[in-house]
Image (cartoon, rainbow, N blue to C red; front, side, top):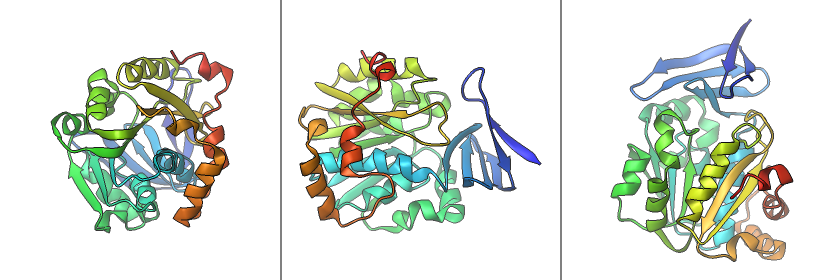
Length: 280
């Protein structure tokens, strides 16, 4: 029996049985492995860290996308930084958006997941509303003059290629590129293990936005308890919308979700004490 060992957190390791290695390679950016696991199905890991699995991806992708888009209520132009597996793009395109731009550092991730994890993107890369840009997400944000209603940072952890997506400069560029009343959503780690990551993000985001909140989502393969997602905007009403408003907007979409509901949306912003204590 062969095992994949993830050692993201010092002093702690999770192991996943490798039933079959579908693909493994080291690109100019990172090491990739895609393998089958008897519990989670197909698993994608980058630089030794699990990114997504067939069985539990919906927790993360639904909450990363539907919370900001339902809260905004009228997003037409959406940007995704990262997300080469296509799961976030899939969920964005379930909304009546006009344009969805995805910026992915490594083309191999898109090609690999389109071929071997097609259930994640479900054809989203072929949707005429989709525009894909291959390149550094931080550099894209620094250079672009485009405006977006919602920006979703579907990033890896703040190490290696993903480190630039957690800086003050990057958050400032995101603010500059948001339309009035727009929303930035960020991946800010599992605070039980990554407390400093959440605290730093909170401080940096509050230097750019007048209203910064955090909400949680449990993802089984992101071990250590709930993950936190940042919700930053200059419209203080958006993350305080009542369940009745959220329910009406969600019903109008006429879609079915497996984790997200308007009640879960509202409750996700009610944080446990140990997380609240980490937010400046």
